[in-house]
Image 1 (cartoon, each protein chain N blue to C red):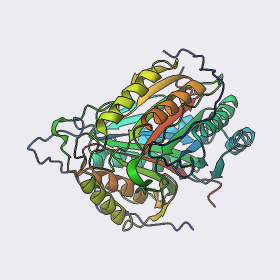
Image 2 (cartoon, rainbow over the protein chains, first blue to last red):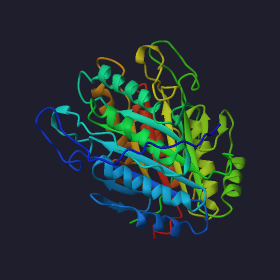
Image 3 (cartoon, rainbow over the protein chains, first blue to last red):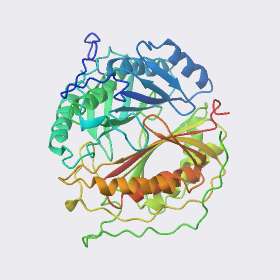
Image 4 (cartoon, rainbow over the protein chains, first blue to last red):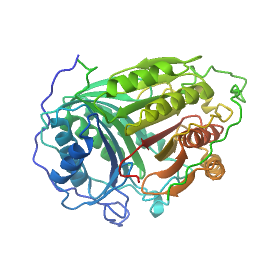
Length: 223
Length: 223
């Protein structure tokens, strides 16, 4: 049931970010970034994780590794390039890898969100990744947090979610609904690109958008 | 910076679920449940994971293990007891364990949500867990998805979020805000209870509430 896929191989491009209200925040000011956790199910897990982090291109990013996850702040294209390189490297070790990916935009803070004024969304381009050559299965959830105002924009964000699902069906990954999540199967880069595309597309009309995915690579129970 | 905590040890109690509109769905009909992934960073990961799943009390639950995660459906008290028992058992192996926990209520479906009619919330009691004797650090995000109607109830759900944060400060865990997440440190049962309490408390006024947490146990970088 798992057909290897060819990822979209369009050249990376710089994100074009702008906002309708004439306010042009940096990705950092808008809270664009990711948290991810790499779990490598082998005795040499620390070596595999540290090697994977070391070889990735962190240009343009602020990267902070903690005991639970690594936080990455920067523009969408840079964040996704980095995530894809780190997770791909861990997957190429051959070990069973579970990666947790959490993308966020529009909220720099913690459990409550001090969003930028006006509820304005930030338009970004869809990140593009080169094929990873590593297959994965992901369980994915997407959260448009359009609850800041009296007219939460539900019509708009549902339009963008349907747009995002339509987009997911064109990226070459296998898309299957399940309880609480959508399952994506294919090349790791195509899967990450699908997740990031939905996050960016919904983010064009909703200020605060997060998305969570659990990725499994080289699972002994997948074959 | 990490002080071991004593978990709340109140006796488990059955959840009392009701809904104001005279509609009384089962936890399953309301989509109450969890997905979790256990990653054990040791060569014998499969044995540790399977042993942890086997020894847990799944009474009242529907449990389905897939290649990425295990889905658990049932009442909040039963779901949390099961999660705590499974993750505690994996932690007691002594291996470095990364656990991803995703709780959801109010939406039985996938990326788009066919919620029960009327947008009504489901009142449940806060699950209670016995102390695990295993410490953990968690990064936690809480999502009230109150975007289904024209008056998304933002005042109500913010009240419940502040109530949930107030509650978190009484459970004995250390609470620290960070980018995109709140860090919780303490006994595994107290951390899970804190996460579940917020989920249930916000769920009293918001129909669809999800929460995600990445837990780290026995991390070599934590000491």
